[in-house]
Image (cartoon, rainbow, N blue to C red; front, side, top):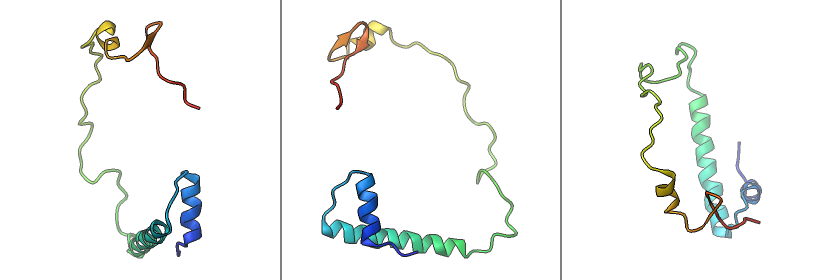
Length: 94
């Protein structure tokens, strides 16, 4: 699959990014290179490779979730630039 400048412009528009012509050309080349690499990986024969979810055989190495209260609400609210009814008050986003 070939990436065109139109494709880059479309993605930039979706992401609400403004790109210069130089950036469009650069990203077109970079995305094209990524897709070429993906095409190379798709050519690799994986028919005898066992599916796996992890590379390493670790099982459940995460710590147990524990609720720990290290700070009081008052200590946390001391960092608020503004507070209203016990909550951080932030400017409205339009």
